Structures are given as structure tokens and as C-alpha cells.
Length: 155
Ligand SMILES: [Zn+2]
Image (tube, rainbow, N blue to C red; front, side):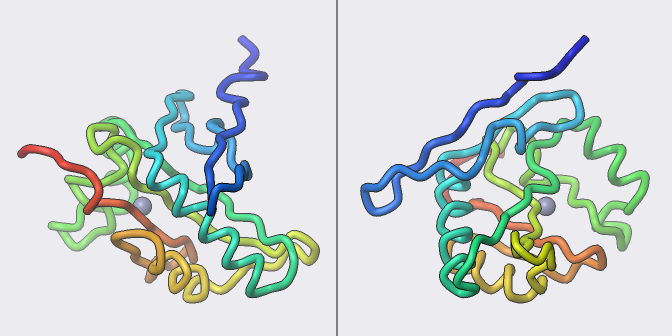
């Protein structure tokens, strides 16, 4: 089955009253094509992208490496990287879980013209301006960012 067109939908955000759209729903898919992104996280991503553009004076791509996860996705990751309560990298109550409403993203940034990676600590520092929680000490260079304070949940 072809997945062409699946979640191929531009997401629109208003920044200071101006419509911007640099992300598609597809970028937030898990491997089964399930996609979810919280409005506050999308806005934070657009602001992050805008700040990186201003810093470099040219287009910087913000690339989503992981977004919403099912419990199965989490189990698969934990099998590889371990649970945090066992010294690993994967939180059992990961904000990537769908129950949190699409508030978490993992990302990297790349200068479009040169294809060079923006340093992890630069991306992380910019994300800290807009996301509630940011972590950027991962070996593979990605930044985790989420909007955990914006979402009310019980339990
Ligand atoms: Zn993450």
C-alpha cells in the first residue's frame, strides 16, 4: 500500500499574527503513521526555527527525529536504550506517549545551505526559551523538548 500523501498536511501557526507553516503532520508520525502534535509544541517549534534563522541569518531546518509514541514504541526503545529507572535513557512516563497529547518532540537542526548540524547546545538553549522542559545531553546529538506544564492530566 502506498503511503504517498499520508499525513502530507502543512500545519499552520500564527506568530505575532502572521501565518507560518514550516512543518507537516507527516513529520510527527510514529513508524505506523500515527501522528499527533500539541498546538503549543508546534508554536514552540516555529519560534525555535525563527530564532535559529535569526541567529544564522539563513534558513535552518528543524528536523523532527521522534514525536508521539505508543506503549509499543516505548518498549522497543527501552529494549535498546534501557529504562531510566534502570540507568537507561527511556522514561516509563515518557511525555512522548499519546496520552500526553503530542507535547514532546525530539529534534536536530541543520543549516540548509551547508547541511551542517547546528550544535546540540545551541539548539537546546533556543528550545529552552519556548519549551517547558528541554534535555540535550544525548550522545546522538538530538534535543528533547516538551510542553509538560501546559497539559493537565490526572494520574
Ligand atoms: Zn524525547
